[in-house]
Length: 194
Image (tube, rainbow, N blue to C red; front, side):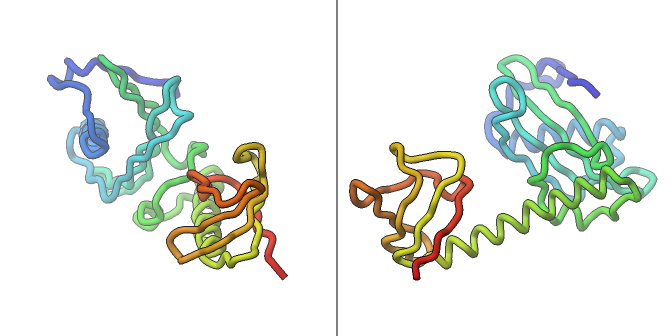
């Protein structure tokens, strides 16, 4: 399915600014698809740099349709200066976006569809990996080494843990103490100290 674009003037409003305004704007559009008779059980809007040319959003929602059946929608969304656009999908289309909150999965029984089953498996795997990553970071000890897989900081890929207070981790590199920005969002492996 392709993208649908509509001018904000059609809705009698301007471009939504905050995440809450954007989420409500999309939710109202989704409800209009069902003549206002559908109920959104849970929804979530997240930014994604790969949606659209300048980055956009992924909107997830669990929805109860007027016939009481339930579905999960995954909508890609962009908000441009004068118009907004969306690409709507459901889980049985096997969307390539997997940061859907677990509560949305719990709202809807899994359809007997190979694409929906695979999509849910990927969503669950992503959540499992995030939890495992948080536990690994919390358990870092002085002397452990963090090696970054897909990035480096100042040409260096390995940093030794100097201190971990459970909230912030301090590192030592070749040039002394360093502050690594957004390091928790990157891929890395931990080499435990003996």
